[in-house]
Length: 172
Image (tube, rainbow, N blue to C red; front, side, top):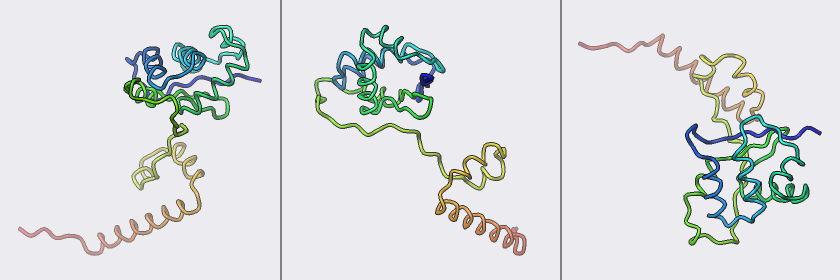
């Protein structure tokens, strides 16, 4: 089994990810194992595939504790695992890091983190985006979204025809 690839999401190049991870862990009262795991991920680069045993050795935990702490980080909304990719959501970690630990509770609930929804396909995208970028987005549309896109295209076409037949005249 191939370990998941680490992917950092929502950070800037000059962000100190280790400091953000430490502040976020303190703000939401993470356990020692969760904190160690988040700090481990913060110190690694995009695309790195650490084996479970390597993470266990580096954090001083057993393999089962690493899996349990990974699930806790997922419950906090700081990471999400999809396919062979483990995404660390630094925009959410920055939000947690900005909280005052004295004002937060140990028992709180977090919304799950997941891939951001793509914005709807615009007519501009259809006209100017490369076909390779548009096709996967079109394939992922639901039936309702596809019908709405077709309606927008039809209205746009009717608008263009109307503009050709009845051009605006400038009065001087």
